[in-house]
Amino acid sequence: MNGLISLTQQQFTMFQTFIYRQTGIWTQDGKIALLSNRIRRRLRERNLESFDDYYGLLTAGTIPGELEAFIDAITTNETHFFRMGSHFDWFSGPFLDEVIDRASAGKRERSLRIWSAACSSGEEPYSLAICLAEQASRLGGWTLEVVGTDICESALATARAATYKRRSLESISPDRLSKHFVSAPGGDTWTVRPAVTQLCQFHRHNLLEPMPGRKFDCIFIRNVLIYFDAGSKAVALRHLVGSLQSGGYLVVGTTDGAHDHLEGVERCSIFLYRKP
Image 1 (tube, rainbow, N blue to C red):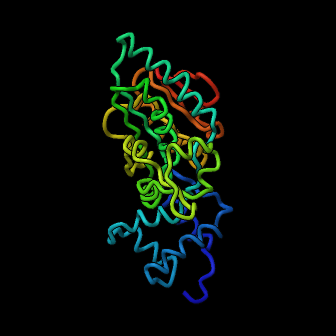
Image 2 (image 1 turned 45 degrees about the vertical axis):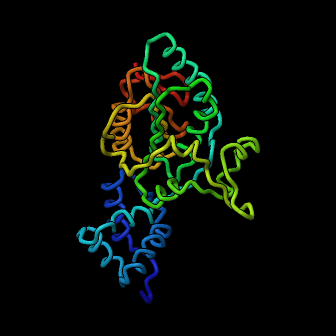
Image 3 (image 1 turned 60 degrees about the vertical axis):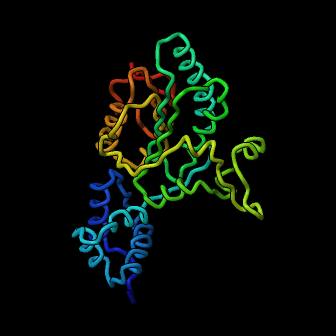
């Protein structure tokens, strides 16, 4: 790799198109240095001399797991617990009030299925599970399930480990921290308690593909669609709405630009949509 500095414009366009086809994420033209650095890690891992060599290996698909490793290398996974607190206030307040009241009136089953789409390293699904755990007295006897999905395997591995550093916990109150986390010796990391983790499961999923399995009562999809262009955004949102139960809610990031690509749902607020 001596003298290997950066992707040429032609190579950048080649990888840019490949990433888009695989993930729906459009890498901006100004990101050539960033993408070069991230791909260079895979070259070192595979002991290859050129970007062209790696592109050939990647597109040949002959090495199991290399595509997943590549996607892990080029995607950004940065989040924290209870990011955008107003969304969780709605979830633990009006949303749970509504579904509990409807169940009490015999209008729905005593079960909840929640999907945290593009969940990164797990902070969002665990935040949702904490909200459910804090309502345990009202949800006794309910079947509760929080499903976290992401395209990045290394992020999912972090989610399953359920151990986080202080930076991820900056929005957690001391009371919540003591109730729902166990501190490691030295206080450098905290692990989510089993009462919360047992509510969650994690799977790899590409938003450009339909989500298999039963439909959901609520779906969170935040701060990822900003990386999609109009075409892939429309595809992802169509799959998301298709995975909602009738009467279910979709929670989106306020800067994701989802509104113009949503069909079959009613807008409730700047971040909230409901499927009739």
